[in-house]
Image (cartoon, rainbow, N blue to C red; front, side, top):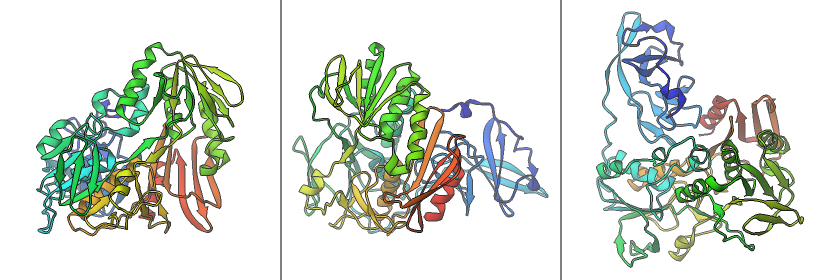
Amino acid sequence: MTEEQMESPSGPDLTAGVLLTDIADGGTLLGHREGEAALLVRQGDAVFAVGAHCTHYGLSLASGLVGEDTIRCPWHHACFSLRTGEALKAPALTPLTCWNVIRDGDRVKIASRKPEPSAKVAPTNAPESVVIIGGGAAGTAAAEMLRREGYDGPVTLLSAEDVLPTDRPNLSKEYLAGEAPEEWMPLFPQEFYDSHQITLRLGIRVTRLDAVGKTVTLESGEVVPFGAALLATGADPIRLPISGADLPHVHYLRSLADSRGIITALSRVKRAVVIGASFIGLEAAASLRHRGIEVDVVAPEARLFEKVFGPEVGDFVRELHETQGVRFHLGDSVSAIDLESVTLTSGATLPTDLVIVGVGVRPNVALAEAAGLTVERGVIVDEYLQTSIPGIYAAGDIVRYPDLHSGKSVRIEHWVVAERQGQTVAKNLLGRKEKYTSPAFFWSRHYDVSLHYTGHADGWSRYEIEGSLTKRDCKITYYEDDRAAAVLTIGRNEESLCAEVEWE
């Protein structure tokens, strides 16, 4: 829950009604119904009434982008149906409240609540059963969408982690900073899996995938048959091959257990070293500074994010952190770790009580390779996210897929990408033949600043900056030759969202 959710509802009482002309065509009007924040959305003469807060993180939809019978959250790009409230695109996985609207002359008002969207009718050629290997973003979103699409066969979700599938982006942000309690972290409570008859098995490792015989073998030796399967094994953190990397105060940050371990250690920590200036590493640095921990960041690059976003963005991010007290040691790396310090290749020594390593991840493709799936720097899938063996799909960090916007084969390690791919796989497991067309999108929050990145431009040739980075109000467009390949925005969420819609 956010501060915005906890505020008293504002605006008119929508049960009493407002003039139709009070709502701009294609616009919204914020009000309330019996104390609950509600939003009227107008499209021509049609008016819809939905909950005013996105079901992802509870942020306001009042400035959302209105499309054909849809509204999209400008914060993290969730998309909802205005007619039913259904969450059409991740990261939101649950529907908006939706009400009936009554027209009375030139006035409109909210009436009774609509029922939640009912499940669709599954096709008759649906698989006998579905096994999902991986309890992360892609696997969980796929399981939920299978039920929403009307599939009533057995769904088994096998997760190597021993906790409920988790909202991973929060692990380095609000949760690590102490602003999000642990009860906010599960994507769904256990009751959701029970009520939707999804067999969620935690702490389960799959040792073999027989793509021809259609079985998976678990570490215990148990064999689980399936009619169709989704491989969503994600990625594992890259481990440092240096002396002291296995000491107890050295932490990686990928799972809830990782973040818990760091938080538990903080009671005796005054100084921390973050190895790697990735977004995860810098978000962790910001969270530690929020808790009053001194932070040093060590990274081999001379300038943050220069190859990805250009020097101006890198300098902006560095200055943002430095104003909060973070110390950078760029163009350097850690050669050894001991109980009280880290030694840099330059010879410098940094005292520390805690080390967080964020130097990247590797896709976990061993199971796919052993199963005979085509793997080339990721599991190769087609535009429907099907692997080289029919009936076996893959999604998330492990897949290399055809990006329809760029025309390239890409592998993207973004949370929203994984969730949306899982949703697409669920539909295709049921024969919907839906191409994966969503542009890549991610957000990263540092203190009070959020960066939104839409598209994919790993080989940009030039970029154009509109607005001002220093004023935290800008849009940067990255070009590959003459094609706009990606945009990065700060303080211009709607423009990031518009780019996504344009490129779908």
